Image (cartoon, rainbow, N blue to C red; front, top):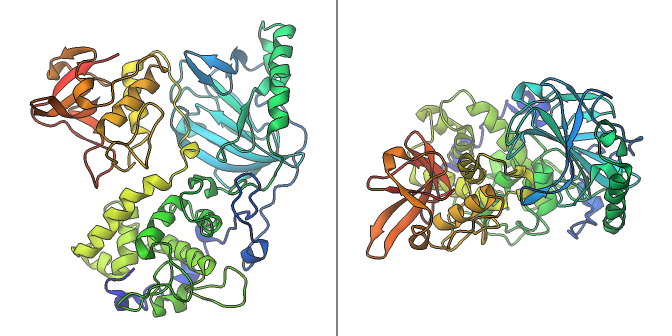
Length: 519
């Protein structure tokens, strides 16, 4: 927030009442106490302008479908060599899905493996519990993040989206919170009636319940884990940002759905390296605090969000929340300009809304273009992997290699990063990405060697013009073999981790590439 700072002193002066008066940018807090993740809490420091987000205790749990409308087809536990973290209830497309507990919707939309999912956070006897509903089509979502629902409420319709072998509801029950990294519990433990429409014996159901009693008792009891019950707050990776910033960044991610907490964190890292307080560096143009506000802009957007009686750009709470509200307003202002709205919003924060409007896009300023690219690339390392959904292997393994890789689009390239378990050290290199995607798509049955040269020895070579989605494509040939590998995704495209400074992307295959089929 440095270049052309003076040009935006008066920017959006009259827009605050218009934009912030909408529901999209209404103030929304995040619960600060964190007994599940040990992030220091400061209840007194979350006060000004907040509303109570504490979840009321839920009433009794009920079936997530109406009786007689579905058939129990797949249990919780090991399946196809991977963990099946819920149960499946098959039924015709558009069969009603009902909320199993009273609670708040914290996610509703696309998620890897699920097609679309709904996540509802609930307070069950003082413990955080999430219920998860998967495989709805886009038009089968009947709630949105932030909605408060009652048990039995119609929240969606059965579909066949994502990694699904037929229309069904995939239903999960999580002690400790789905986005908080809790523990998935067999839903039969709390809803034995799920199996009433199957031929599973009572003895088998008792075994399911007995196996989970000890696990349930071991889950920490807390109804106010960081981000629990707050839509958007669970998208930030735990401990990715400094602990004093984390609760505020989570809260900032609830201000509007377009500006998420990982983006806020990446922006704070770029702006002033998370430095704050009276001795934090001030830019050459006079921008101050962790969010680098210019004085004139601060006079319009700065608010006392930490409730200490002062409006201070060097305060973490005041700065981060003001940053979020300002970014949400800018997003609305650039929405009519062609291009990536997040990139345009970041450009407006850095160079001024006027510059973006004049150029009808990201201005041709080197600093602004670097600013946008740096933050966009860094966002991936702040994303909570629990918020991505999860990959569910099935029979169509080749196409699923692509699906698994696409789940990490936007993740930073890191030399030596990634492997069969996913990203490491903040990202993937090219062969780390292919190692993960093939391992995931094969349900752990195929483990590739680590380097692109070694991976060239696996499977069979396929003429490049006969490649199909999921085949590996190799290039950058040298005396020891290929120096680069990607995943063919169809139509001449590949998903790959290009090089230092880039992110996992889908791009055209390169000249001279060769293909191998490994599944």
